[in-house]
Image 1: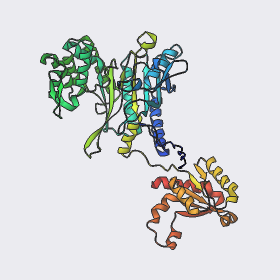
Image 2: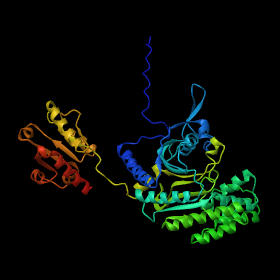
Image 3: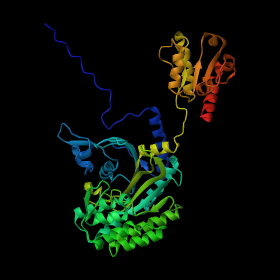
Image 4: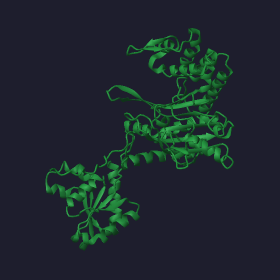
Length: 496
């Protein structure tokens, strides 16, 4: 009779959850360096840091994301033991509205804050689309003047240049929700559902062009696959203000604004929006920001259901190759606008607010595409272990290096195979290895090895005699350790 075989315990798969990823040392260091550059610009503009919890109450987060076929409408939410619902924040703006409403009597008005950190969205993951990603926001709460919007646009331009996006490789494009409201008013479109359909159609202008938009605003059109897309059902005359709006972009801001005034007709809210754009254009000009950096562009329609006034988007204009090898522009890395109704949810009173959010991962990807992520020696100096009984000597060397501000570590693996120690140092991208055997100890010297230079020279050196003459390894006095290691690191950085 066969014995029952005991089932082996099921081991967990060593995989992150779907839509999440790990960030290793160099990636984290690159992101931190870029965030430090952004912070410097934000701070220079007078914004203060704010850190709020990653978790908010569902009630405080308010309206969820549009991906409504996901659980909890696109957020990661759960019910606490006291039956209260809470969720991971899906952006950094909703927490700001809660903070300002809670502490408005203690905070200065206007309140200018920046925030950086991960946000979470329970969306369908895909290529380059993750459920956890970093955002970097700056907002002004309590300033009704569009000067606050203009300032955000100027700061966004400065920020892109500070992190390494050169002038000419980006454009901050500015529009206004009020202008579009004026267009809808002139069209006589008052039904909320029909307005939403018009907005969606406008959003397709880049893909289908003027003729395609005309068809979609009317009866409909055949798409590229041959499928028929139903239209909004507007008459030709009704659709005309939208076409005028979408084709209003001219060679200069003055002509664009003139065209927009025509598009909004007699709508007062539309004219208010055009006047706000006019003010922003003048403020940009006064500060020396030309249309090559910040431009009035009616094609910006990002999140217009959310925003109440000016909207802006930072687009990178250089070409990259997609996965099929085709050229395309890199696209948007930041966006924002005025949202005067967000704090009202808490206070019942309208509080003016405007702000921008930078997609940190996309901006990092852009910098890599342009080769602007500087290659710096980031690994530690590795002090090798030739005699495990002299660990105190090696730790004393490391302490000296660290106290001098040099990143360093003692090799803590099995020291039996010295070659493995150097392989470890190579894998850590160490600039320098320190070697002190018994003979060196007696003579009061150490060997220091320039690992980066050694790797370059090793492919060119053929004889042992040549190797002895090359400068990748040198003997120095023990008392000169810090000074000589510092010189070797500087040389490696200059050559890297």
